[in-house]
Image (cartoon, rainbow, N blue to C red; front, side, top):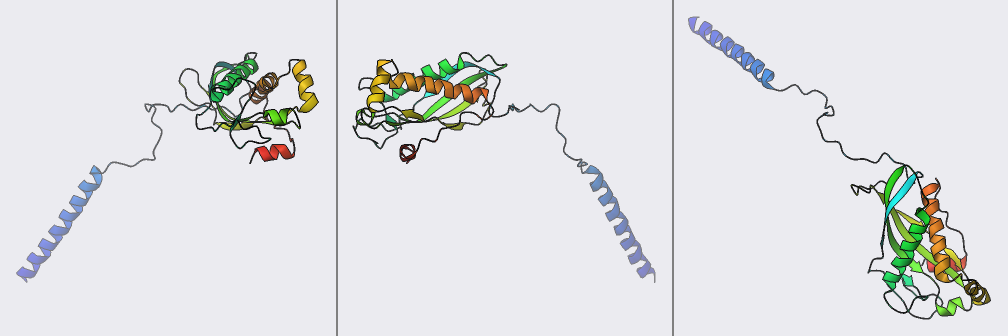
Length: 223
């Protein structure tokens, strides 16, 4: 009997010890409260701006014409390439297209006096004007695509997601092209003024520039 009591006491002592250890362990576990934002955590810069912005002033313009864009000098109606340009002397077509875009973007954004300062980034994706054969016969479409994004001019942080703008323009041909040139409306002048209006609409209207429907030639250019 004494032996049974001793065993019982030892068992009870073990249970009490186990309970005591459990309580100590639970007190040492930190309380896991719901995660709350820390006031001391550095803020992540976000834009809070709606695309497209319609109250901007452009403080700088950067135009890129990637060297990966193909160039054609073939005198065909629809050369298969990214860049077709003939009104400047044969040379660096990428640089020539960049100059046209830079002039157009500045022309279109200089009058803007909105409250939000931005840096305008443009990457040319396609610049398909007319070859000599097309210009002096049937005409066609100036098929122009570019990627547009706006940045904080001080930090470089994107204020808008990059978006592709399709900015096609009906291209004169034959007698109409000759008459336009006589009035000073060369391909370069028309395209520059057109792109200036495109960027103005992109940055001042909610719907942005709406690419016109120019028929079969336009569809062929997109292939």
